[in-house]
Amino acid sequence: MKLSEAEWAVLNILWSGRSFSLKEITTALQDINGWNKNTVYTYLTRMEKKGLVAIERSQDKPYSAAVTKEYCAKNERTELLDKVYGGATGDLIAAFLKESTISSEERNRLKKMLDEMEV
Image (cartoon, rainbow, N blue to C red; front, side, top):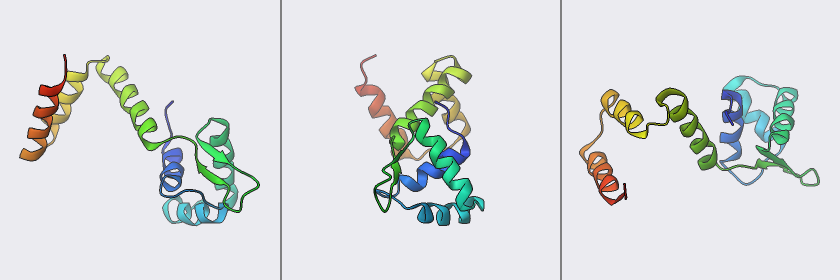
């Protein structure tokens, strides 16, 4: 499932704690996107239908993330890998390494990971 930038913004707030009130989320998103309470509520209810947000209506702070950041990040990586690199993990990693610099610690960590992998 591909998340929109707005969904990432909402989830990043929800991942920062256990549960939130509509006012708390609105305040945080107003600083980021300038959203009002109605806009935030609309996003939250749509995201609940997608299984991204849990709403416990009997609570004072009813809103929480229904998915983990790791789960969403994995889905994004998989989609990028499939769409851009045809599933070729090595090509994706090579592209990242060619276009950015890494420290010697990161390089050693990557070497160790590759050595430990059973391929």
